[in-house]
Image 1: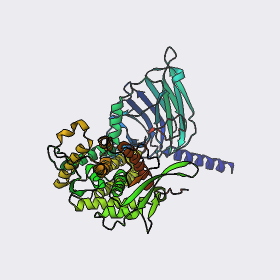
Image 2 (image 1 turned 180 degrees about the vertical axis):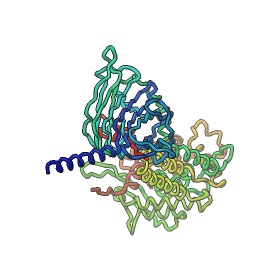
Image 3 (image 1 turned 45 degrees about the vertical axis):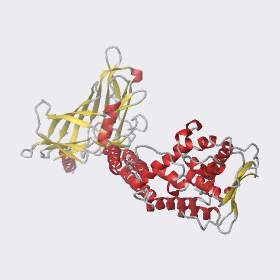
Length: 571
């Protein structure tokens, strides 16, 4: 009975041994990483592959080179591949580029191998070194975590191009499945004769399929020659084509602006003008000058309505917790005879309902919706009057919408390719919206009117000593000063205009009242009206606020982290 039990035990043992011998495995995975002075790395992988009793053609070695790192795509440069046996004789191999991997297929489809075979795979890697303020570093997934067979023994040797002081050399290693922070079995320093460190050696024991060895080798700055800033930036741009998009967008939009966004040429010389052309209002004059409706244009229109007798402005001081300056507007006419649509809307918005008097502070947080409508009306009316080819507001909204679309595409690209793609699309969106500001185009008639407005500005800004060059200029009197003051304000020359009347304008006008009216002058009036303009800009534009509820491997490193990686299998 004992004899049969012994034979059975021997049989089971032999079966288990046969199964173990038949199982494929990597008996030894020996990797040498020679770091060169130019930061390239010569990689040599000596893989002793045991096919057991299986008959196969060879193995695959998958080496990744495309990564999501540093906010975008980051591609290593792989070159000079070669495969030999342990004696230095070449193996047949082909390289396929697949899903960001260089797939090295070693072996001959017409022949089979079995037992233990040694493959020596070599290649050169560029861009794998990470640079920090106090050290440079290689963070490398040496074996890869995608092997379908166990690795019975692994070793990684890192060789520096020069020597690094021991206190500036750092080492770390991780072994296990992807994400594991388990340490490898050991690492040690390789010393030169004077005890400086010339390299590092990492080792680990048995690794299951899907497990790998990742190493971190830090060394002193200056051991390698860091690439120039320009070359590093250029590589980032090549890895992330979306970063070229802003330049292409800028060139395209500049071409469009040059061909279709510039105003027609007006007169070669500016001729002085003594009244606004075409009976334009100050807001229309300001919009034609810079293609934009500003709050200063609207405040000048309010002053113009006061000068023409439609309302009266009074400066007052009110006390809440602190004293503050306010302005009361008193309605003097019903405004039914106002000829311009934007003036009609402005007047009705200042005096809503049947109000005959209103304080600017009361309109605060309510007027902003009317402001947007006034601006749209003014744009459309100037296009209707044939001063602009198209509504400037609509043109800008179109470019703004296109810019927002680019932002949305950038958000989508960020999920696919990283934050750098968002930067490329986002900057492009900003460029589009910025160009939109300059895209409204005047008609030939609009360009000529702009020249006439510049003639009015020249007349308003002229110094007293130069007035003799104007022929048949109107007589200077208080009424003439007041009539053109809103236009001088919108053109930014109210001080110059006021200086011309400093000796003949010494009374406070009927349409404006300020309690401290002593020593009144044209300069005092313009100073006070600038304060009124600032208050208009602040109060009438205000709206209510709404309530609103490639790092270092030494910090958080893990198996499978860093560059390198991949895996392989037999075929």
